[in-house]
Length: 113
View 1 (cartoon, rainbow, N blue to C red):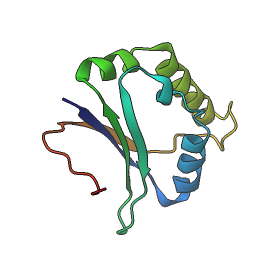
View 2 (cartoon, rainbow, N blue to C red):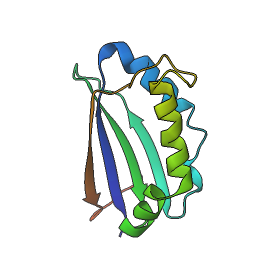
View 3 (cartoon, rainbow, N blue to C red):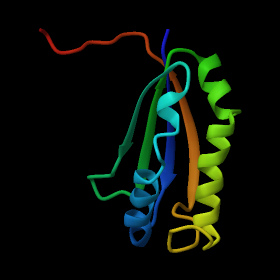
């Protein structure tokens, strides 16, 4: 059964472009992870300040392996470097808060062929 992880990031309006730039530059690190099924960065469209980082995994174990991997660490080291002004960003954290939501996929429907 697939699992979905949604990292909910509170992002001040002034940092939205920077957050999106950082994600665009993530160099596809997660795509090669075993058990990875999908990624989406969702921008708020209703006036709130929360972005959703949606990932889908074959299993909880696959997500845990990814979150403990060198690729995961590498991506977050780059984000820290940007936050400290040592990377390619504008310095400072792009989000002012984060929480991780976890779900099991119990039903799925796709387009009819």
